[in-house]
Length: 540
Image 1 (cartoon, rainbow, N blue to C red):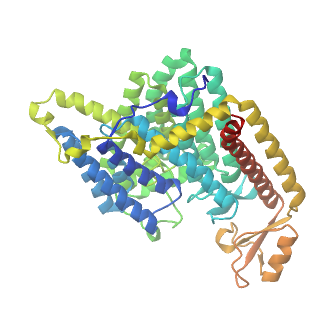
Image 2: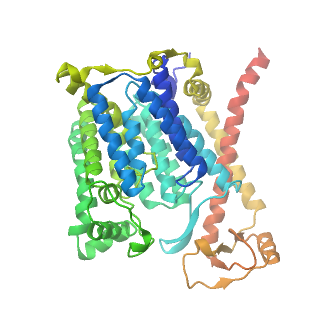
Image 3: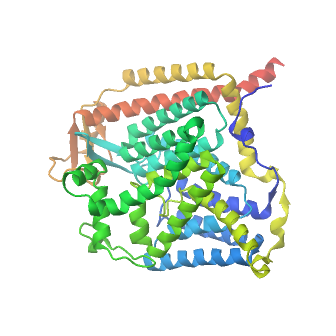
């Protein structure tokens, strides 16, 4: 018998699932998958996903037993969500309120397992499809650390989104990989940190890379250093207030050289926070920000806390902050260190990224918020007059148990568990296989592909408006590519192209070599792991 701990058997849930729970998991899967594959507002497929997801949410509520007290506060949250949509056209707050309001009775682990399977599949597939050129991607040319460099989105709407999505993936992995020794957790954290650096090599998102690093440190300290647990328990209650103070008060009170240093380190985010805090009015349920009425139409609110206060309004913002405070307090009191690390990591990342409250649907903290709120609600309603505890259950079939074999999450997780076991038992051999294929592929790339000296980009992604133009014919493009030069998004002879040399094409060349090594190495490991059962059956 193998003593390998896997994601699925280590935190196995009850195999029983009701129709109501299944409905919620489908709702969550539809909404989460839409964002996991990079869909965004305005796309037809995304709008269809929203309609399907909200319909499933409605059925989940009707299929579940809810007390009158629960229905009242659920209604308040949803009404606030609709008010925000009417005033701002921003749907993120409403989406997160449906996530919270619908989670009653749904095992937290099943929701996270669904998220891990979706994102664990979508993230590498999106990276492969975009880096291989099969699918076009969003990218921009930016001037960073003294050079011009392409920042890749890898299938997501922005490089920062790509990196924050990786942070969510690390949180989901570490949610299940728990109860390990400090040495094992350190090894896992190092592997995830290597992944962080690989993602950074393509996104060049400093804030995203720092957010992942901070989360890994918080998680390791909370889960693997028992002596520091009490200290971190106290510190955890200070993280959110510090984040709020830095994000909302810092831009207003910090002046002079220190302001400039922080603003430069945060890539102008500090100035943008100050701009929106000082020029935009405070409203109850938010307001629309029209680009033409801003000082610069490119201005965006990258800070989640500023976005929540100014875009969503005071009432939704206060609700969200109270939810965060209570959930952090509750998880700390219960000693749920892994979940607490997730909450703190998200709070820290929200200082520089807008994903906490917008329509990204990546903030898995709301899963934890929902479960804690329903526990609190039951405690409160038990102390109120019996009227408030009276249950309403409209669709009785919601209590009917469904055979777990129809739950796709469990079917896929069992299959992946078998693969993980095979790799874990022979991790040294698979590690050698991966490294060997990785190195051979990179060397092969260097031998087969010429080293570029120049990279050409079109007008849409050009960083400098006064950069010299190059008008290329189709014959020029063919000739340059034959010499190894990199041509990005050439659209025709009438469109100017802009040439960048030095480290710009060199870094892009190394990235392509790295992608070749990573994907061929991973493919080699997967093929061998898949073929192992066939070899065993032939021997028998």
